[in-house]
Image (cartoon, rainbow, N blue to C red; front, side, top):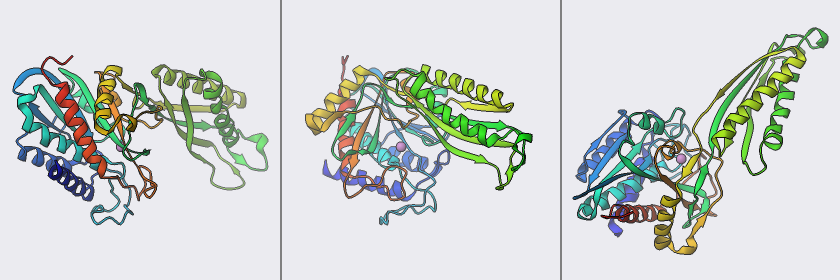
Length: 383
Ligand code: NI
């Protein structure tokens, strides 16, 4: 196996050096197509940005899919690696280079084992995971999942120590919504507030009260987050402005919770604005839903992970408040998404940091785990 691991690392480094932003992964797409075609794996694309490789077993059977994302981030790399990004302000700072390399390794193994495969394996190289609207939803809309029985996914994960595989059943990554609040008051001189409707005061009150939604309106075991990330009001120290603006994010593990938070948000803003005589606009955008891991499929992959790295190296993890557009697949068909730990004490930089790097040892773990899991899943008569 060792030469395949070298090949996988080579793939990762090439992809790391040539990152592309979401919805612009055209060279990445061409590169992946070339690699798969050279292995003898036919490819097609549903959106012109993704690559779907197809491995047909020698026996008939079900269809399963496994997904890697492909996009990089608008970050100027600061790792100093010899294969650092050659594109200014674009960097694989989330590990998607490693995800692609793992899936190429799995492809290279499985194409030699078609006599052991009953059915079809779709290798899904998906564009635009990092942006809304993302690639997963687009592929679902383009009928990627028609006839597909199950879907696997994975992320190299810095918060988990290297060598450990994290799994979870049920809601595993949060749903993520975005909102913009604009308060319209009436501006005037800072010395004569009685003639104004001060939107800065009003939005301050709104921000404070929004924090009551999670603490007072949701059940204590219904985990959620409401965070304001942006706030703008006014332009000069003695002028009360006409409008104030804030934007933020909402995270949750139940779809109903998202509806409830939006409803409460409207009620709070409406109540405060009417008390002060201001008007408002709340633009609430529902984003990726929570990622739901099918229990049966997750036990299946967990068992293989235990065989692969040892029972003590596989951990049940808490839900993660980050979001992931793989969630769209998980709402359509049984899916399982797991985490390959890459955390190291001497590499403390998290995902999306300009010094983020992966532990390449975990690439081989991912390749072996998914080669064996898929092979087992595609065995004739597997239930
Ligand atoms: Ni990512």
